[in-house]
Amino acid sequence: MALTGQEITVLGAGIGGLTAALALARRGARVRVLEQAEALTEVGAGIQIAQNGMVVLRALGVFDDPPPAVCSQGVDLRDYRAGRLVMRLPPPAAGPTWYFHRADLIKTLARAAQAAGVNIELGQTAVAVSTVGGAACIHLASGREMETPLLIAADGMRGPGRAAVAGDTIAEFSGQVAYRALVPGQPGAPERATLTMAPGRHAVTYPLRDGKVTNIVAFQERRDWERDSWRDTIDAAEVRATFADFGGPVGQLFQRIETAHIWALYLHPVASQWHKGAIALLGDAAHPTLPYMAQGACMAIEDAWVLADCLTNDGGFAAYQARRIERVRRVVAAAGANAWRFHARSPMREIGQLGLTVAGRWLAPRYTWLYGHDVTSSPAL
Ligand code: FAD
Image (cartoon, protein in one colour):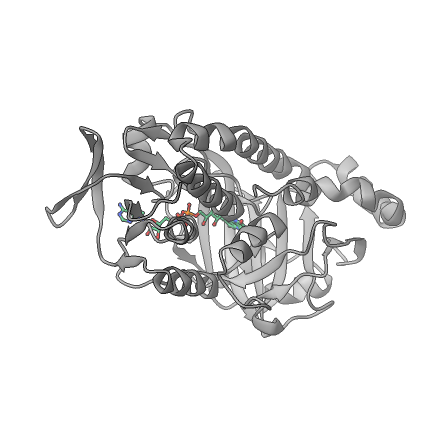
């Protein structure tokens, strides 16, 4: 059964909301997206979309080939002091990861959704959502109330959707912060990411926009930054100093940082209930994850496909949750475990890292779990 003419409202025009809107519109639904922002922009930074996300985006016809992104040739693990190459991970067998500028991905998704008939309304902040009879109601900051037969709350980890469906959950500070920066140029091997592990810290870099810029995401164990914001800027000199002992090409990148953002990383449990009446949660609203598998957006993209499939085939929201929850739990747990694997804490770990330099070739196949190769090779379709 197609969703022909079915009216659906999506709250949030992030990667999850826009993909869901497009997937539902492709099945014939009349979709409206409400977004609090006045313009569709993302704070400039990169995002990796692995094969499991790309399969869905391609199936939805989001972009012509090639996508507006850099096709990864794999990941280089580097030791932090000298920046020596420890090992080279090839791209996953299932297919390569692509490095998008977030703004490019959002813009491309929005364009595809609008071309499919989705109506995106900006500047619409929901203060609450609720169920009324068999429908859902969105209470907007303007005082307006909108009823809709079906509401997909893709409003992220801090939106009102989660509280309405799953009740309030307490997020716990992970003790880790992330720094984000873009710097011009791309040193070292082009079209490859680097992963550099150090005591209490690690950094991931990858090229964006044909290698004209490099995206840096660096993580540090830091108990003194518990602000629940992800758009704070931080003095670039402080970031340069924090990673001053990083050598080689990655160290050079850090020394080029002029503007940086910081945000605290929180641990949220995966919601145990993803739907209530006419409302369903999608993406970070249901399952925020630490970013250490680079899978949060990919999981939101998979959710979108499965949701549209379940609504089309009469399985409804219950089937959607049942098909998604175990896979998502596994990815969120694996990302949490990577947090500690990536931070070479003890002297033994440092010695271990030296050992890896020597034994890199032998170990490489055994280290593919580091980057979630098993996850990317089993997409939701
Ligand atoms: P969001 O992106 O949070 O979008 C929610 C939308 O809803 C926003 O547009 C917001 O403005 C809107 N909204 C919120 N509240 C309201 C309201 N009250 N009214 C109206 N609108 C509202 N994932 C990957 O797959 N690959 C990566 O490489 C990767 N790297 C990451 C790096 C870092 C450092 C971090 C923190 C995350 C990373 N992620 C990555 C995770 C990824 O960014 C998220 O999982 C993904 O963006 C979630 O998308 P979403 O659409 O569910 O939510």
